[in-house]
Length: 176
Image (cartoon, rainbow, N blue to C red; front, side, top):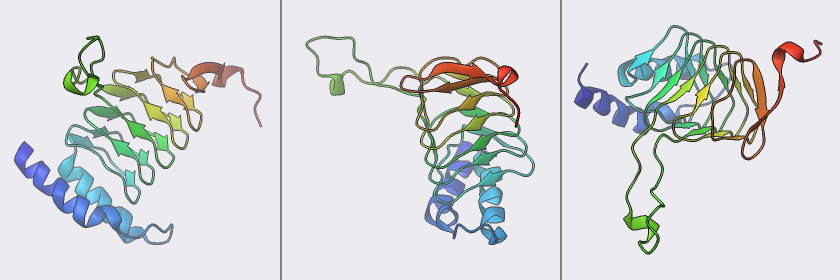
C-alpha cells in the first residue's frame, strides 16, 4: 500500500476510529481501531489492541498480541515486538531538537535525525512512560510508570525513574 494511501487512512482514523468509546465490553471499537492499524502501520500483527485516543504513524510496527494503551503517542519509527503490554499515556519520540550551537536559539537549530525506537517481545510498559529517540528495550523488560527511558534497557530488566535506571531483574525477583 502506498504512503499516500496509508496517510489517507490515518486521517480517517484520527477523525473517526480514534475516538470510539472505550469500554471493556465494547469490542466493536477495538475491532475498528485494529482494522485501521492494519491499513496505516508498516506492519500490524494478529490480535492487536489499540485503545481509545492512541496515535501512531505509518512507520509503526506492532507485533502479534500487543496492546497500545489509551491516549498513547507513537511518533515516527517505533517497532513493538510481540506480546507488548502498554498502559495509558505512554509517549515515544524518535526526533529531538538540536541544541549544540551556543548563540543560536534552539528553536532555529532544527531537528536531529530521526532514530528508531525498538521494543522487544513480552515487555510491560507502565503508565506515562516516555521513550527518547533511538532507545532499544530488551525482551521481557518492565518499564515502571512515569519512567523516562533515555538509553537501552537490558533483557528482563526492571527500570524506573527519571532518567530510567535498572532497579532489578525479573529473573531475580521473588515470585508471588
